Image (cartoon, rainbow, N blue to C red; front, side, top):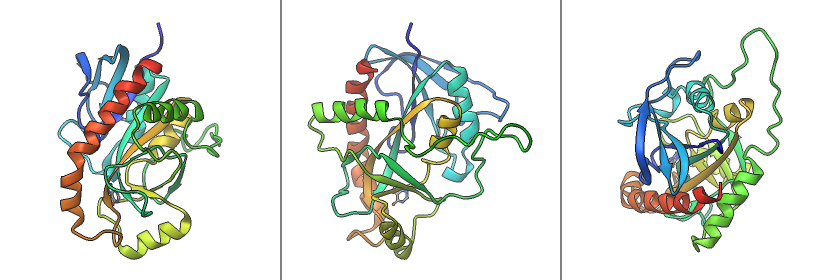
Length: 245
Ligand code: HPA
């Protein structure tokens, strides 16, 4: 039997919408408890394990998430591949709200998060992170997005900020100069921990607002307007992707 696919939901994917016969199991790990119960079931014919990174009631801020426990719990559940959904701000003009983005690179601006499974003593895992997202898993996402005619952006640099506040306009200008196309708050250390744990990990993001200083109106109003449709689009992408995994 193939290993179940791990799906990490968040602001952009709040529930395991396509999941049948979900069974919830609370788990503990040596790193503490994950954000919520793991929901197991079938989605589009595929066995999946779903975890909401902000917790079932969306109470955990990006810096307060126990990323190590989340990744360890998914690995312990037998997951070998993780598709992580994210709501992001768009930095470049082509990163319009509503657009799906499958990033191929990231820059980590977070700080103070438990970002490695390495203990203070013991072997040091200098994992190769040249390509932070698994190329094969990305390719499946990209093909599914093309098949759906989603007009997805299939290469992008994902800048990950500390939050929970949104960025200043100058911070976004700096990120633009650094080469970032989209900005979110939860992509790291999630991606690096998955790599340390030996799990294939890819991100499918949906732009829900123009980043600070890049849009016309108020950011929160734009997020409210865009989120429901963005979630529905990511749900469709997962419906299409899961049978291929
Ligand atoms: N900045 C950071 N994270 C985000 C944003 C943003 O503008 N929108 C959604 N997540």
